[in-house]
View 1 (cartoon, rainbow, N blue to C red):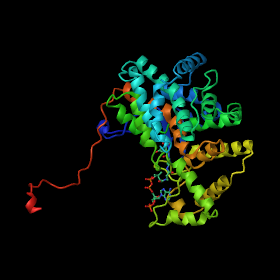
View 2: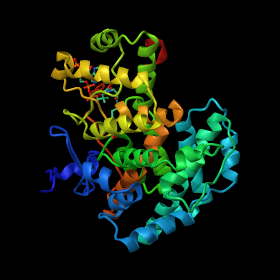
View 3: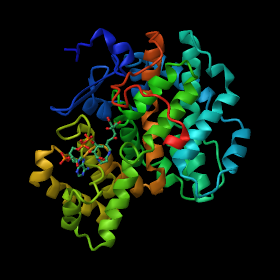
View 4: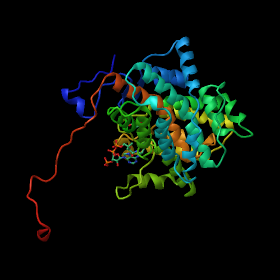
Length: 393
Ligand code: SDX
């Protein structure tokens, strides 16, 4: 059955919307993309199939998928002048700020992506962005690491090529030829692909509703995702686990801090605005983390600390009463870290995963010809009052 909800007539300007893309039930821990369960998609589909499903409404047949791949490959290049913008950033720049800036800058090199009223124009802007973002992701990481930039190898699959561009170095085969790592990253990208009207997706929809171009609407979403309460949580989780490890692995001390109202510390990777049950994505990612670390032969004490923390939190009355469970960000960083991805790049990986969802939501909003977003407010300020000259203030 569809997850139909009733909306009052005022929905047009309250910031909420009707959408047919993703259904989630926070109480039951259910997540479906266009009616397909996340569990099945993570197991049986690949990232570009899921991207097609989210954006166009159904799983592609072979001909549709082949055309989608070919159109994306055609645009898997970025104007060399974009490198000059990248060069202007200090190495200390956070990759999310770099990625948002470069994504916005793409508009200048792809002006046809701005005024897109026909489905065909939208499609062309969409495949351009899906083709170019992995290049920007790899360039952002390599800039951070002081490594030369590459364009990759378009004969490879989408995820393999991303890994090749990110890790092009003597032992890159460790990544591009390892099916476990490729499968784990593909799964991670699928699990992050959409999540109905979260903070960054709402940002994309409201930015796009002014008919600003697709690229700048996505750049706005990247900026919103950066925050540690949202996508930035995966970086914050690893920094928290590192701090606990450096502090002798004393998880009880950090559980106490998380419950101490006078302490601003929160257990990063726990809790959710909608899920008041286990985040179904966290279950799948936790299993993938075990597989990747096992395959790479990595004994990561951070994973043991994470599992210890999760066990304590699930048995802690404060957390149980507030329905605080591990969310999508709790285990993802452990996989990225095992793959050698720098911690400041974790949220960039989230942004790449969320790209198809942001695009799907933007396209739905445009095809529905929704009015410009204009949430209203409850005014709680001063009633009318007369002006006071400065000598009377
Ligand atoms: C994502 O919206 C989405 O769909 C987002 C996302 C997506 O796919 O787009 O799922 C991705 O953003 C996941 C969330 C990642 N963020 C974190 O892991 C940061 C840590 N989590 C918290 O900051 C918090 O749980 C939020 C922001 C995620 C949700 O906040 P809520 O629902 O507004 O919860 P709240 O602030 O109202 O807290 C309710 C109670 C409070 O205690 P009381 O005042 O009732 O006594 O729970 C407590 C909070 O203090 N609480 C926590 C906590 N989260 C909530 N206490 C300790 N640690 C935490 N993590």
